[in-house]
Length: 239
Image 1 (tube, rainbow, N blue to C red):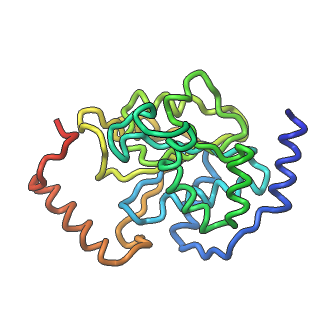
Image 2: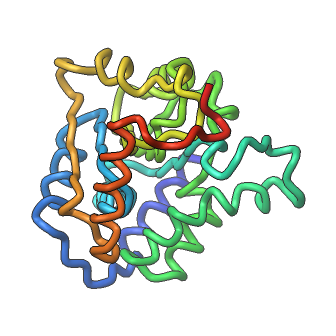
């Protein structure tokens, strides 16, 4: 097993073909924060490159030999309250819809054949939080997307998987969005738990950092204004 891992690492160093990527100043700052900390909390509105930046940092850490694995996860509630058994197809088919946003971001950084190789060899792996019990992340960079939609027990279950050496966890989310009932949202208390601990870094993107159409900035600003005024209609998961 050790020989195989070493071989894969050499393969990645030789054959990972990076595309030309021009990071913004904020993306560079966030990347440096990830590299400097064991745990990173990166927040910001939709479209501000949180996932892209985390994927870029993770691939660089993999290429440079810091880790031998990238683990991806996100809450299943982000596309509705389905469990894996309710979706058709094999487990791999069921997970594809959750992996897709990560694949799109990796595709902006490295060639598609490299992405396929990394997933096929399980060097990059999507792992539902339900499958994390009892494991310890070792030699891994873990990207936790949409973390605002995990409850506090799920967040603690993830963060306590952190291994001692060559391991990082990156939490990504939007404090103004969630896909679970508000009474279960654990983001604020989770941030409070992690504050003022060495090795934990916080970074925030804002509306001006959006990488999508600029109309999105105006839409999100109006949405948040109406949300602050209590004028939004109730959603299915509100209680």
